[in-house]
Image 1 (cartoon, one colour):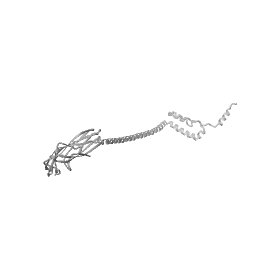
Image 2 (cartoon, rainbow, N blue to C red):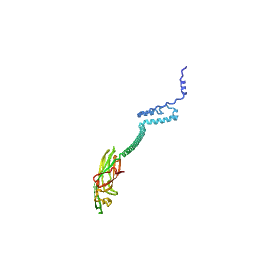
Image 3 (tube, rainbow, N blue to C red):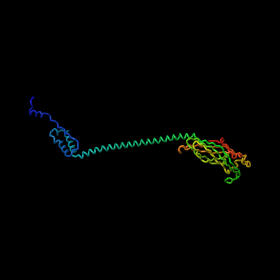
Image 4 (cartoon, one colour):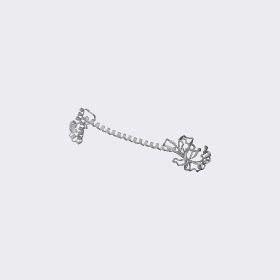
Amino acid sequence: MHAKTDSEGTSIDASWPPRSPRRPVYYVQSPSNHDAEKMSYGSSPTASPTHHYYHCSPVHHSRESSTSRFSASLKNPRSLSAWKHVQIGHGDDDDDDDDNDNEMDGRDGRWASNVRLYLCLVFLFFVLFTVFSLILWGASKSYEPKIIVKHIVFENFHYQAGNDQSGVPTDMLSLNSTVKVSYRNPATFFAVHVTSTPWELHHFQLKIASGQMKKFTQSRKSQRKVVTIVQGYQAPLYGAIPVLVNARERLHSIAVPLNLTFEMRSRAYILGRMVKTKFYGRFRCSVTLRGNKLGKPLNLTDSCIYQ
């Protein structure tokens, strides 16, 4: 081992390939104007040692140009902060627009689902109400009122000669009678409102007396006796009842066949006027007016046809 001389060291350094320059290190921060100028001057290629291979490299030349641009941006921190603000603000606006769109879509979806839910509930309510109403209506049909014509009483009658409204001479008949009817409402959950057509007495097609029943309301599971006055005053006969002409002097022995007709109408309002039930009953009762039975009840229970 021997010590190297200065000439050997110099020759070795000259023969060794030159090292590439060390890359400058930059720190991104917000320096003051004075520090930015010092950094830009210190990092410029003129401050480093002059080497021919440094200026000839195109890669290092582009790096030098980017370094100079970055140094210029550091000299003007306002432009850097403005650029950052624009980029950040633009990103925030996009996020806000997306959030608003998502929120509006969510609201529209909830509103549409709520509308569909309400429509389904309304439809279900109408279906259930219809089914319930049909059940009540069908159940009410089994509670038909029980109507029985009990009897009729002829109080009096008068037969005499007279003139009709146009002045034509004819025989006239006046009579007074009362009809008794039993009405029963067997329903357990509704009352009925009862009316009727005029009650009329006919001799074949000739009407000789009529009367009107008073309307009433019958509560559930109850019954009543209905009495109606049927009377006629000076009804023109035009010879339609010859038995009266031949028995003018002995009216107590006459027998005149008559027909009592009327219709009773019962209405039940189960759910107000939305659900109601009607019962119509037509009656045709055959009865004979006898002169010797005045003031006595004539049974009509088995003499009436109910339709």
